[in-house]
Length: 553
Image (cartoon, one colour):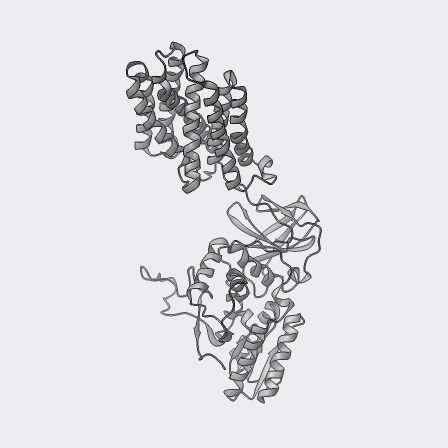
């Protein structure tokens, strides 16, 4: 029977009602199970204690039925729960040994209900906590009723230590034990209470024991049902957050100008400040808003949801918020998707790697070998764009290829902004006349859907195959974390991590738009037939990337 956390229903009242029913139901059930387990230890059960057990058993049974009706809980589980919890009070007076076995079955069911959806170590911790709580309920209740119980002091300390140890382990596993989420979130407060209250009950024992353990068990049941709090922002680490189901990327999360990336049009406000619209950026997917963040902790508001940010006090990389900012942000996103939280100190446009320089030299060598007499080179003012243009010009001079504005091939080595303009211009020119008969070529970092899909086809020198398993896995993981986000070469490298060296080979790949088997306007595709290039796993949506050369020497 599912008494675990449920998705948001859209009604705060219904969610709160489900949580209250869960807490009362599980607590009452634990008390009844504890009495049933410990009943054979005493000769007679005090009438008042039996009455309390019977009332709590009836309440638990009613709430189990209510859960099945109102909260879509498994009906069979609810019925079994109701039967067991009603049987225990009856058997405790007539057949205590049989009642113990029924109480054991009820305890097993209670563990499953409390820990549903959890596995491994966390399931084991839940089992220990629930079983120890039920046993303590039984001991404390019998003690308060002045029944004959064995060695209450040592047992109370033992059970208190077990509960505190389980709570401490869960605190460490939760990740909130050593930061402010422990006392600033309901999740953390519930965990802290589940750890501290058993210790208090063990020390004080007697009449506060039942109250303390009951409160601890309520806290434990609540923490399992509450959503885990978001990880705290780390200054200088681009922040991937959630705004009511909408992913939000904040980069570089340093004082001053920052970019906020959204998958759809929207607006961003800093605190109570005015809303800044998110707009499309050349060559980048999604929408981007430029905001100024103060030093230290603050917040932004996206789609009515408040997101905490922490920029620290150090200044950030200027490239991260400039024209090449979207590429820098999506590169960092690759690392975030892989689970790494690296401080953003450099951006891809800050330097030309030797691997990319070598790829550009081999590209020019390929063009020279084809007899391409001239090329047009498009760079920009970034450090990478300037150096890449120099590398291409030097390689062209060495291969006897002229560099001029009306070259036979176009070689784009700029950042995304300038590349988008150059490719748009090339596409327009090719529609008007036979421009660039030897083709359009782009640097490795320009292989991303919003850029290469602006032309019918383009060629890029790569050291990996975008169809290989690693590249497909990256594209799928990226789409899961940030739906609709275009895969990028620099993001893929960041996703792989620095421990993955790039292969030495360089091979030319053609990126082309795909429109296989077009349907008539408004005509649906046949069942099971996907639109070419659509769906997760495509490095270039609505396109294909295939090798067109052997590895270049």
